[in-house]
Length: 551
Image: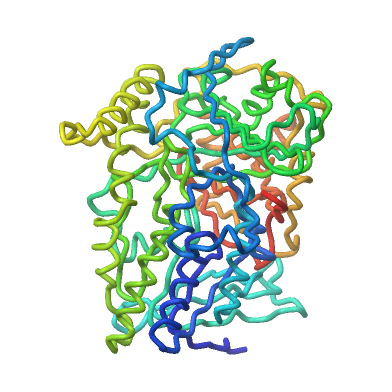
């Protein structure tokens, strides 16, 4: 069966904040100028927002630019931050950092907390009202190229392929979507974007991207403990010599969004991020908030942490990178949706102007790159470019102090004195040998405050059609047992927050790696942290994966 094709002016891969902001801006410009412009957004989740996971504390600067009256339009993010605390945790005690010592860039005045997934659902409605075609449940599996090598568009994956590669009765070929320009807004560690990096050498001259894993739970807590608009960040216990920390956000309906972030440049292969998060919840200051409440949702997602020096070339013939697929997160602010949205808007303006000038696509939208370097996004990221790599360079304590020192210099107008930029290195290369580190003893879950992975995955509403090829591909099937197991004690068993990877058959003397792909919550950690870079994450059938409500 031949694939059908559809033609658009702009095709956008990913219905996250960046992709939807781009789509809205394109149609706004078309309406302002009286030009007809066809825009399509493709989303691999079963619905818009199904795969969106963030804390989230949102700086509304980009939303104010895109939709100035959003506060009057029933936007679901409407809880303004009223209290912002920072805790340093010991094993049993906490020490609050005085607010006056916090650089202004770390404060949350004027920000809002709520569900980023619900914000994306709302943005999708705005986009559709403007004439954007939004297609959830369509996983983009392939980049299409013109004869001259420029991007022609994308193709969605075939549906109805069995595990053995044969076509089932339900088989349907993918659809080709052709465009003058294609926007890639896949989010962190995009599977298509990885290929674009290689095809167009987009990472030449920039540092490797670095990442963290974020693990989140949503709780309904005792109303007497709820303080609407309070946001808390923690660092310290239980992590030791590892970058990361926790967040606790008091959101609507007596709900608490809490989560734990672990930087993926940790050395000890025995470290277990999910278990670190569960242990963190047993700290008296955190446990007190959760007692008497109940957990209602769970999820996980990788987070970009490389900053300005890890951002790749953003433009290539026929396409652009926007949002977290390029890595615009401001790490010390713990925010990225505002920068993602703004990059989508800048790319939209560049593409609209190009089409208005009569260009037919296939060229590079260099005006987008120029706009980025003149924008508040570049300024914001430039100020904090050394914050994350300082933790690796100087250690967690001294690195934190140094990062604060740099941020204060910028606040005092002395940032011009800071002419240097610290480098990043790939996270997987930091992983040490198992024999060089002690194993970490983690307490068993109690089923009340702390939980196991499988009961957690259940709350993520994750679902995949089981009779399909695994979307977690091994480049070499021998590596997990011949290298990862003896040298690193098979760390994939621990860094995955969904229990996807298991070593079975040890007792019989025939160990093998079992991949439970149906559990995958699409966090991408395995693609990032595998020490031999042997795991390749590709998209499963459209509509598969988690279905996050209110996350």
